[in-house]
Length: 461
Ligand SMILES: *Cc1c(COP(=O)(O)O)cnc(C)c1O
Image (cartoon, rainbow, N blue to C red; front, side, top):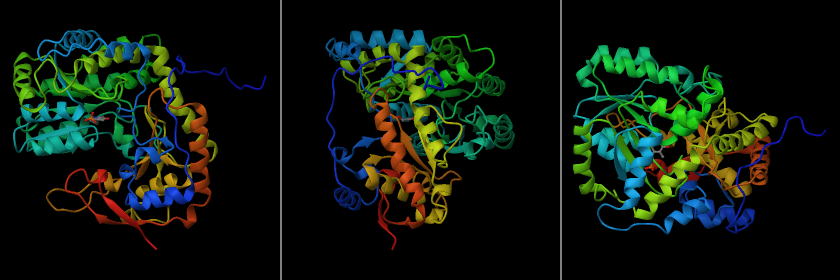
C-alpha cells in the first residue's frame, strides 16, 4: 500500500470550467509594479490562482444556479425572501431577518442602531469593516480575545475564544452602560480563521446577560466554526454541524452575516435578531441604506441562491472537505518548514511574514512584500494581513503595529483542485529558499479608510 491513510475527495464534481491565463514572470513583474505592489490592485485576469479571499469567490452548485431562475423580482414580498427567512430560522435559530447586500451592510445597520457615541464595543479581535462601522457610529473597539490568538505559535485548539477576564475588566472599568454590546466573531478571520468553543460563547453570554449587555455574533463563518467544535470539543463528535450551529447561535442575541463566505454565494448578507424592537429599528433603517426590508439590496435570485447555499454548506460531508482542503495546503507547506500560524484555521493558511522575511522590519511591510513576491513567482495572489491592514490609531495617527504580520492564502470554496494547491506550495517553498534576497517596501499612497485595499508601494532598493 502506498497510502499512509485513506484518501478523501470532494463530495462534488466539476460541471462548468473557467479557463485561466498563464503568464510569464516578466509580465507579472510589470503587473505588480503597475499595481503599486498591492495585490488588491491587480487585474483578476492576470492572476493564475486567486487566493486573495474566500469572500464571494465561491463556486455555486447546479441546485443554486437552478434556483437563480426562480428569482421572484417583485419589489415587495418576494417569495425568495420568505424562503430565506424560514431557512435562517431553521439553521441559525433567530426570529427576525433583515437581508442586506453583504456583511458590512448588516454591520452598518446594527452599529448605528446599537452604539451611542462614547460607548465601548469589545470583541474577540477586530475585523476591518466591523471595527470601522463601530468607530463611524461613535464607538471604540476593545480587543478582548485571549492572548494565545496573537501568538502564531500557540497550539490552543480554540484561539478565537474571548478572554472573560478582559471582558469583565472592561465592564468594571467603564461601567456596563458604557458597553454597547460585545461582538463574538466565529471563526476569527484576523486571527487565522481560529474557532471559538461552545463552552466559551456560553460563558460570554452568561457574563454579558448578568450585566444587561447584548451578544452580537459575527456569524459569517459560524458553520466552519461548528466543524471545529465537532472535531475538537468534548461531547460534540457525534453531533451534526447543523445541531452545533443552532446551539452556538442560541448563546447570542443577534447576528450579522456575510453570505459571501459560509453560504456559497457571490453576494449577499443579513442581520438576524430575536428582539422585536431592534428588528423594527433595523427594518426602518434598511429602506434608507440598502433597499426594502424584503430584499435589502439583493435581487430575489440572490436570496434564493443564498438559501440553497445554506442548505448545502451545513452538510457534514461538504464542510469536512472544505476544511480538509485548506489543511492539505498547510500540511504540504509544513513539509517545507514554512513558518505559519498554527493550528491551521478554517478558511486560509497564514504565512508568518515576520519569521519568513526576518530581515525586513515591520515598517517596511514584510507581509505586503511577500504577497507581491509570491505573485511574481507564480501568479498566485494572496493578501496582506499585518501592519497595512491594521491601519492607524484615529486619535494619534500612529500606525497600529499588530503582533501578527501575515500573508493570507485563502481557499475559495469548491473552486480549486489539489493540483492547484501543489503549485502554490511549491512557489512558497521557492521563495522561502531564496528569502535572504527579498526587499521591503515603502508606502507612497495611503487612502483614508481601510487603506490596505488601495494603498500603493514602491520596492526599496
Ligand atoms: C467578510 C467578513 C465581513 C464583512 O462582510 P462583507 O460581505 O465583505 O461586507 C465581516 N466579518 C467577517 C468575519 C468577515 O469575514
